[in-house]
Each structure stands twice: as C-alpha cells, then as structure tokens.
View 1 (cartoon, helix red, strand yellow):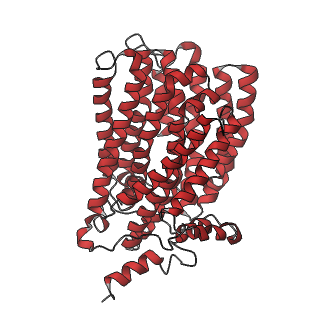
View 2 (cartoon, rainbow, N blue to C red; view 1 turned 30 degrees about the vertical axis):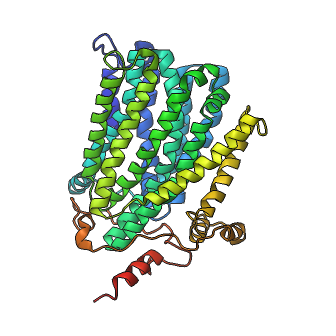
Length: 476
C-alpha cells in the first residue's frame, strides 16, 4: 500500500492542475527520494508497534533514536555547507535507511507467508483508523496550504514557526497515547473494566500536569521564544498566533489520549467520525474568518488561521469528552483542572513579574530555559501545596520511570495529600462501551505498563481496582 501510494504521487506530481503542480520538474528528484522514506519507515513503524505489543515500549523507540542520531550530523552539514533541498532530502534518506537497517532483522524474522483471510481480518480492524489518519493529515496540513495560497510565503513562514511550538506540545500526548492503547486493549480483553477507566483518567491527569504549565510558559514568554529562536520579525508577527496555537494544542492533546482509550475498547469508528467533524469545523472557520471571504482582514490572516485550528481542537475535545463519559463513564473533574491551571498561572505570572522588574532578566536562550525550569519547579511546589500533586503521584511516577527511591522519596514529604483521587466505580450497565465493541477484537493488547502503584502487579490488579472492588462489595 505504501509503495503504491508513493508511485501514484510521483506519477501525478509533474501534472499541471489549474496551473499548479505538486512538484516542478527541478524538484522531482528530491520528491522521488522523499517518497521512498515512507517505505523505509514502514520497517521502523512495524518494529515500534511490534515491541509495544510484545510489552517492551522502551525498545520500541530504538529505531527512532538510531534515525535521529544518524540524521542530525548530516542535517547540520547540509545546513552549513550544501544549502539545498536535495541535500536535506538526502539527510532524511540516510536517517531512514539507518532505522530500516536496524529494524529489518527483528521484523523479517517474524514475517509469515501472506494470507488473504488475515489481511481482510486486519483491514476490518484498521479501516476506521486508516480513514481517521487520512483526515488527520488534512487537519494538520490544510491550514499551512491555505495560508500559503491566500497570504503568501512570508506569512506562511511566520505561521509555520509559531505552529512548530504547537507540534512540540503535541509530542507529549503522542508519547502517552502510543503505549496507552495496547495497555488498555489488554485490560479490556481481560474484562478488567475499572482499570480501563482509571488508566484513562490517570493518563489525562498526568498529561495535564505536564501540558498546562508548558503551554502557560509558551504563552507567557511567547515573544521571547520567537525572538531567541527566530528573530524580531517573527516575534512581532507571530507572538499572538503562537499563543493561540499552543492553547489550541491542549484540547487536541486530550482528544488524542481519549481516542486511544476509545480505540482500545473497540470504538474505532469514532475516530473517523470525530476527525471528520474536526475537518468540517476547520473548513467553516477558515471560510468565516480568513481572507478573502472571512471577516478578518489580511493583516490578521495568521490570527484567523490560528483561531480556526483552536476551534477545530475544541470540537474534537467536546465530542471525545461526550463519548468518554457516555461509553466508559470517565468524568473530568473540574477541580483538578482549576488547581492545575491556577498553579501554572501563579508560577509563571510571578516569574514574569520578576522578569519585568529586572530581578531575573530573560534575553538569551540560556536565561529563557532557566526561567522555564524555575517556573516548572515553583509550579510543582504550588501543585503540592494545593493538594493536587499527592504522595501517591510521586511514588507512582518515580517507580514508573525506574528512578532510585532516594531521588524521589524526599519529594513525597512536600505533598500534604497522601492518596490520589480515584474514580468511583460504576454499574457496567451504565457504561455500555466497555462490553460492546463495534468490531471483532483481533488485538489482545499488553499489560506491560506499570500498575497503578509500586508493588502491585498486572495479574493482581492495582489499588484503583481494589478500591473499586471494595466499594462495589464482594463478588458473587
């Protein structure tokens, strides 16, 4: 499939449609090399998913690490000495080839002969996810293409610079969602429904603890980030788009995590429908806000594009939250949202006040990174003081990361609350999504991720399952 798609794109690339082509004749060589990358990445992708399914998500990341290590020096050389699109293309080819070579032996040793029955079975399982990925591609790439067409190359450059920070924020939920899906799928297959609910809740809560202060830091120092890592032109034109885009990354990030949970219980068509709604809202918002038809002038075209992305993300979160609460009865606690947001706002607002007063100037990249580090440290202290960060949280995170206890043990004394709030158990009749998947379940999942507290095992259940059992009464 990947090879067929690459060949098709290469064939239609030089064709003129309405006076436009995907790639002019002088760039066909670079395009041809770029189109080989998905083929090479197929090996590392299969390797990644295979080892996540086998219960070793750490080893699953090795091909990406190999690719980054090999590609980075080539990119640095090309940036300083070659200055060409072809050189950048070759740098990506070298990195992708390295990851493919690393992954090939492990993948090839597990390849069996092709059977149409298995292919049909897997396609029935995966077609909604494939459709959702295609629509997600539209959501990701449509806005830059429209900005380029309507506002020009200069505005596109500013938008992409601001949007790069949004992409960085979204890497956090991607890192959570990738191992979360097989973990929850394994628990769902074993009918351990309370752990499916608590796993979803904990993934959302811990992601919020990292995402919200990161976004607040980017909004607080938006001008400084762009001025330090780009220049004053980008800072003056892209500060507000950056703020809007990174705020819009929060609902989209939570949506990705919720979708992983809904996928794990067999509700894969929802991803297709919800992403389709995102695309619809995005198109309507662009038409209403952006020039030449929208209500905002061309001078605010990037702001309009950023608002459209924000509205699309809010739509996704609204729909995902509705289905999460309807199907698996996981309710987002407003108190946690308020405490996390309050802690982040107080921390970085206080730090910004000191910056403006001249006590802690932030002008260089080292001063900026130091400010962000201090802001995060103060944020976690406030979070512990208001009772959102608990001793159980510190224990769980420290053990999950395999940190030595002397490193994180003293931090538990800073937390005034001992136990993390847990979800109340529900009657399974009120959570229909847990027992009624849409499609057959060929995927058995894994219980590789750590249980909900140190010392608990996947076989015996964690404290969340024990609390649910105690609250529900004895079985039978």
